[in-house]
Length: 274
Image (cartoon, rainbow, N blue to C red; front, side, top):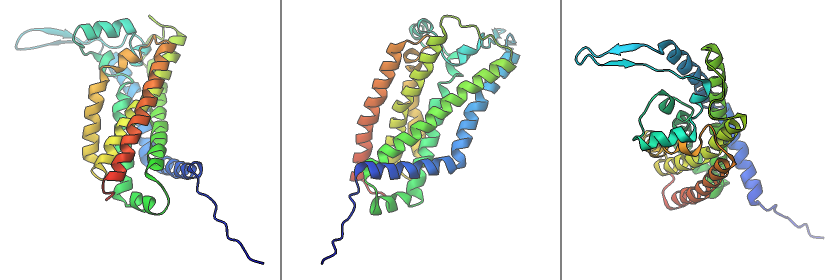
C-alpha cells in the first residue's frame, strides 16, 4: 500500500484572502491609519469654527487702501460640496478660489495620498515586499490587496470628515438648511465621493510602486496628480448629485482601478524590487 502525498492548490482566492488579511491587520494596527482618520475628523471642526469666528472681518491693505471682507461658510453643506450650477459658474469664471472651493471635503483626496505612499513605501523599505514576493504572493495579488485596503482607509477618512463637518456645524451654529439640494442629493454626493476615491487610490498606488522606498518622491508626485484632478471633483460630485453622478464615479473608479492596477503589476514585474 502506497501513501500518496497531495498538495493543496494555492488558488487565486486563497492567495488574495491571505494578502487581504495581512494588509488589513497591518493597516488597523499602524498608528498612521488612526492619525489620518483623526485628522480628517478634526479638520472640518476647526475649519468651520475658525471661519465662523472670522466671518465679516474687514482687512485693509495699508499700501493701496483696498478693503477685503472675509466671508465664512453660510451653511454646513458648503464644506461637503457645491451645487452643480455653482461649480459650472466657478469654472467659467476661471475657477476663482474661495473658502468653500478650497477648504472642503475634497482635501481628503490629498491627505489619502500621504497614507498610501507611506503605507506602500514601508513595504519596500523594511524588506517585507521582497520577502513576500519571494515566498508566497504574486505581484497582482499585492496590487489588488493594496488597492482594496487603501480604498477602505480613504473611505474611512471621507466618512470621518463628514462626521466632523456635522459636529463642527453644530458647534459653530451654522445652518443645516438644504439650499439647492435635498437629502437624496447629499446621499448621492457622498456616494459619488466614496466611489471616486478609487480613482485617486489607483493613481497613488501606481506612483508608490514606481517610487518604492522613496516615499518623499511618491508623495510629491501624488500631490501633483491630485492637483490636476482637484478642479474636476466638485463638478463630478456636486452637493445636488444624482444617480448619474454615482454611476459615473463607479465607472471611473473601476476603470482606473483595473487600468492602473495592470500598470502597477507591470511595474513590479519589470523593475527591481529593492
